[in-house]
Every structure is written in structure tokens, then in C-alpha cells.
Image (cartoon, rainbow, N blue to C red; front, top):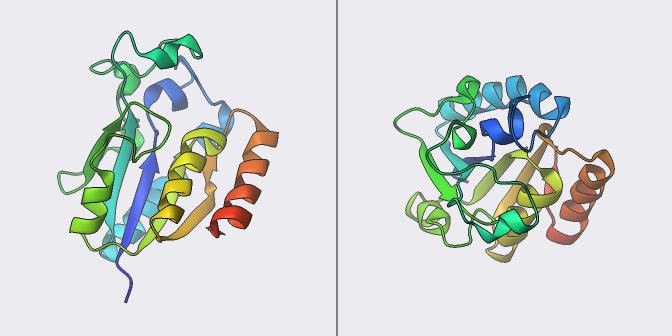
Length: 173
């Protein structure tokens, strides 16, 4: 039997709240209830819940391409209150697009014996797609919840879902 994890990617104030520095728009707000319900359901089924949260240093090189956002220790880097983690959940801070680059995510998945990963969050065409690429390379069974992902660019969102399905074998449900 597969052991499941839910990756909640970048559901932080700077991306999801209307006053966030890189607000992903109304689409990001609309996925919150779906994600909340999915977390509750999967938690009851025994899944491991892992929040991956963008957290940058004040002089991060990513700020050459994007305005300063999700600076560690600021409100912008906090997970939106509607999706607050419990003490049993993992929080994995990241400074790059993929949830795996220089983080403990791979160690957590192995320690927990995870074989199946459910992915939700923002942005579909950036951090979701980069993380799913790495999940594919590590042979995880991946489910992307279409009602639980959003992007500031509808065309990029649609392309990313199609690419992850075709190239990485992710099941878009």
C-alpha cells in the first residue's frame, strides 16, 4: 500500500494574500478551500502533510528577476492563516524554485516512507512544475490536484499542467 504525502507549495502571504508582493491573483484565493479540505481528508487517511514555503534572505539573487518577497521572518513568508500547519506537519523552507534544492524534503519523504505525493499550491508554472520535475526524477507517484493549484498566468498554468502530465507522468486530477 502506498504511503501518501501532501505537498502544500508556497501558500504564503506574499503569493496568496491580495496585499502580497507577488500576489498570484484571485485564482490563488479560490484554491484555499479546496486545499484545506484536501489536507483534512488526507490527514485522516494518515498522509504526511508537508508545507514548502518560500523564504529568502534579504539580498537573495532571485530579487534580480522578481521584487523582494517572502523574506524570512516577515509576514509575507508566513503560511496563510486558513491553512495553518499543525505541530505534526512539516514546514520546509526553500530559497529556490524546487522544493528539493538545498532543503530537507527528500530526507523527509524517505524517512516517512512516502511513495505517493499529492501536490497543491502556487505557482503552477514555476515552483509546482520544478518540484514535480524532481519528484519524477526520484520515482514518486505524483498527483496534481487541478482545483488546488493556481498561477498568475492562465496560459502558463495550462501549459505547466499539460507538461507535467506528459513529460513527468503526473496524474492531473
